[in-house]
Image 1: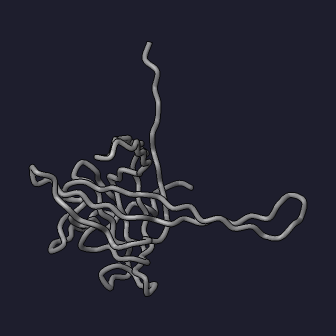
Image 2: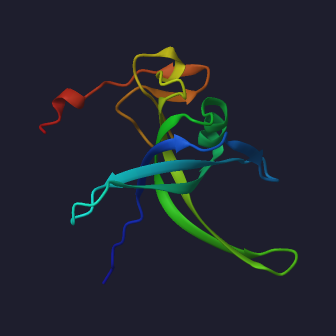
Length: 157
C-alpha cells in the first residue's frame, strides 16, 4: 500500500536581500535569497494587536535561478512556490550545521520595492521552472515573453 504525502510551500513576502547567483562546478545556476513574511493578530482575551515576522531562506535552480538573479532585488514583493527542505553538514572545523530552506519551482514578481509592477507592466510577471505552465504572463527568458491565455474569468468561484 502506497502512502501519499505532500510537501508544498507558498509564500508571499518581501526580499530581505538581493539574490546571490552562483554556479555549481558543472555550470548549473543556483540563486539564494531571503523572504520575510509577516502576520498580525489580536489575542482572544482582547489584548493589544500582536505582530510577527518570519524569515525564510529560498533557493532556485537552473534557468529559474538565473531569472531570479536578474529580476529580483531587495525589497521586492514576490510570490514563491516550492517545497521545504532541511540540509545538514559538517563544517571544516567539525561543527554540525543545519538549514531549512524553500526550494522553489515557481516565482511571481508582484511589485518592485517602489510598489510598481514588474517590467513597468500592468500585469504581474510570473516565472516558472521549465516543467511548469502558468495562466498569466510567463517569462521564459529575460529577453522574451510568451502570452498565455488568461482563464481567470472561467473559474467558478
